[in-house]
Amino acid sequence: MRKNYLMTPGPTPVPSEVLLAQARPMIHHRTPDFEAVVRECVDGLKYVFQTKDSDVLIFASSGTGAMESAIVNCFSAGDEVIICFNGKFGQRMQLIAQAYGLKVCVLEFGWQTAVDPAAIARALKEHPDARGVIITQSETSSGVLNDVQTVGRIVADYPDCVLIVDSITGIGAVDCKTDAWGLDVVMTGSQKGLMLPPGLAAVTVSSKAWRAYERSTLPKFYFDWKKYLKNLEKDTTPFTPAVSLMIGLAESLKLMREEGLENIIARHARLAEATRRGCEALGLELFAPAEGRGNAVTPVWVPAGVDGKKLVSIMKNKHGVTIAGGQDDYTGRIIRIGHLGYFGDFDIITTLAALEMTLSELGYEFEPGSGIKAAEAALMERE
Ligand SMILES: Cc1ncc(COP(=O)(O)O)c(C=O)c1O
Image (cartoon, rainbow, N blue to C red; front, side, top):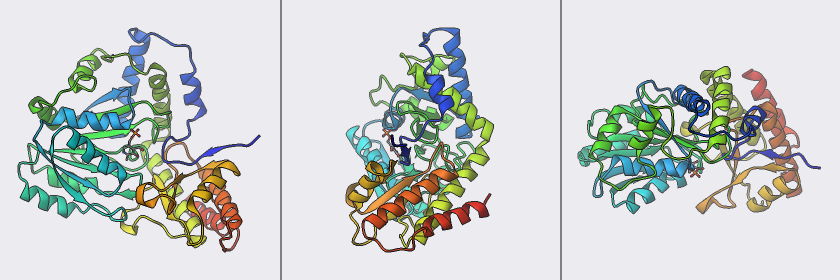
């Protein structure tokens, strides 16, 4: 028998309360029982998205469905949009926008650079007819956190331009104030901070985004936001929902309310700090820049002379600890330790212990125990 630990930035571990809720016998979705579940999910999601003003819609899809929904519901073919990215997932929005015939102005930053809000302000001056600014808050591929609060202030001056934020690894890990920061569309997926299996996505839609919807002529059916809104008014969904996942969501949202959003955000900051300090103590170099480090995932450079793919494989196959490798150009060059969602102190300690043992096996020289020691100190400091 080997005990396994899932330390990836999605899917993330699911608490037993949520697993048990999902294991209940199936119920029919056109019933008062399920309507109560829908109400709990919407109310709870409004709490985690920090919104009272926006509508929250839930889809049976992965996060990419929510991304595509934002494009087809806000725009028409030929509309100009500004897409800023510093990693793989931000770039996906460019691909979706192009697939739907939008005119895309790309602000590309390196994977190790936070998006510069001043560049967005300049782009909006140069493209005053832009109908949207699209940005990833927490870039999973690079671990960089982008300042969507400042971007919200900038886009607020453009009444016909919506701000679309991919917070798929942000919600439930870092602060994301939908209303207070003027974020028109914010999306998340279930397999991240919401502590569920993959398969659900949610978006918030502000009144400005609804105005964009009224103008939009792109074809839409499954992801047509109005269909979801009309049904939500009756506490139901337009199509057969992912019943078990929504029952699980109601449970995970209950857990999140019990902990409190501020405490959840503080817990992520503390675990991320312990992970960073532990890795640095081992002589490993952090990938994300100091001014833009997120708390959902910690990417770290694989040290010279160590085979990054082997590292990930030994961690998983020998020690039972699954971490993520790098993506695209960084495949085999970085590792990514996820700590978003259902994570506690000893997940970090365990992972660093497995990392130390693996690095030793791969011939990397360091002071054994130094990573765990530094992480423990960081955890005790911020208790
Ligand atoms: C920031 C971000 N955006 C978008 C996605 C895509 O979501 P999905 O794989 O659920 O479709 C992910 C998935 O990891 C992500 O981390």
